[in-house]
Length: 216
Image (tube, rainbow, N blue to C red):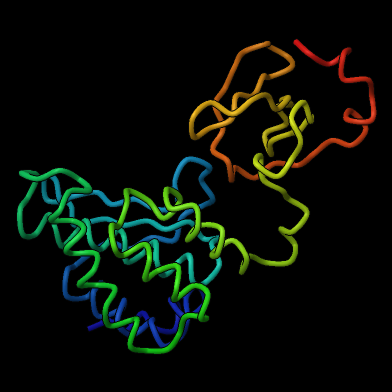
């Protein structure tokens, strides 16, 4: 049986790594450290045509976010083992699996107190993603690397501010529509809806200009 603890401890709290290593071995899961993806933190693919269970987790998550995302995806694996594809992806069966798998990590004293409190609240009704629970997501983001602190979130910038994404596209923040913010891409005038805690870089050289000249 392979021991992946040493490799895993580079990405998650060391005390958690042996448990995840055992899960990988017991399930025959193909576990992959993935490149950064803007649309998801991790994913799970069920066995198909002889392929094993597959889980991938973004490499650039902080250790606590990496572990919580890993537990999230293994909850999908366990749910598939029990019910195949006969239940909803994030239904009561998945919520039950998530709580079961999270429990041993809560006994290890590996989470800081603020994350522990956020997890406890989240576990009352686990959602499709830790990103969906803004309190948990914000708490986890507080442990990101210092090099990423130059980023800010859409909810933290003023209306009509100009910001850029890491792909170079430039937007102007508009009003909030229910749970997301309306933003206009300056080059195309297209409207996009941004998650409140989407990470962006404000462009001060644009924002020092007269806002009237920037409105689409």
